[in-house]
Amino acid sequence: MKILQICNKIPYPSKDGGSMAMHQLSDAMQRLGHKVKILAMNTHKQDFQESSLDESYRKRFEPEYVFIDTRVKIFNAMVNLFSDKSYNIERFYSPAFEQKLKEVLLAGKYDIIQLESIYVAPYLPVIRAHSQAKVVLRAHNIEHFIWERLAGSETRPIRKKYLRLLADRLKVYEQNNIDKFDAIAAITPGDAAYFKSTGYTKPVIHIPFCIDVKPLVSCPVEANSLFFIGALDWLPNEESLRWVLDNIWDKLLEKQPQLRFYIAGRHMPRWLKALNRKQVVVVEDVLDAEKFIADKAILLAPYFSGGGMRVKFIEAMAQKKTVITTRIGAEGIEGRDGEHFLLAESIPGIVAAVDRCFREPQLPEYIGANARSLVADKYDSRRNAEKLTELFKKLK
Image (cartoon, rainbow, N blue to C red):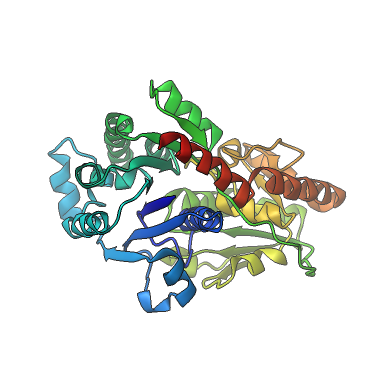
């Protein structure tokens, strides 16, 4: 089967959860025997140089890239206020990308065109005009949910009102365009249920973030270590980290004075680079996330906004790490509190959960082993690629 995968960011080299989710699935589909071609947006966030690609990737995916300036611009945002359009969506439209897409469609025939996120939906008209392929939306999130939660947790009135406006317009755009897809592959079961609840009558399946579960490499683990890793230009990540530092870090040190908190992530804000907190270690450049995770004990990441799946959670669980988070943080992961991760919603609850892990070392050992088994069972790349293939066959 010949598949065109259209991405709103560079999928490889993978530098964040979204790009990893794209690459892991396209890689698995290609290994099943499909021919996958990549057309991706190159943005300021990616800091991507095409010369950095290895030759094997070029041969496998024949990738093509178009630079799009997706940065938020004050003037454009102000002009957008006087329209009824979603500024979130507008930032991803480019005549140059549309032209390149047209050229790709005219140069080859595809069975399936997979759009990675609703942000690529503005290109549906040119796809329909130049291809007979079935078009599938891979929904990484219900995007307006993220902005609704950000608005809900914002305390500054003007910013809160603006975030609410962004959420409302994005919701309208999503609802007005969902029916234009031939099928939807949602990344969480809850997201799949949401699409069905809207009255969408075409096929909807759940295809989660996938991972190749590798054999564990023996590695000494720092006994009193907590860690956080994630792209810090994504607002829910920064919000989570600020909350930990502002509300619970000092309380944790009172109970466990030997604790260290390691923080890593791309696009660190200035306040974090300049952070000077007792036993907090900020690591700006992590070349290998797997190695960073390997010698740390507990992943601490309570979330109060965002959506979809936390890719770093799956990576950590595959390495038998215990994840401490909130219910929002665990959304999309088919596990149970106390068995595959630990959930807490309040300051005292999260402090108690961390303290318990270090006082009862058998608990994180138990949870970590269960977490790895869950990842191997539910989030294996090949298994989910086979499931997606069955959907594609039904659409043909």
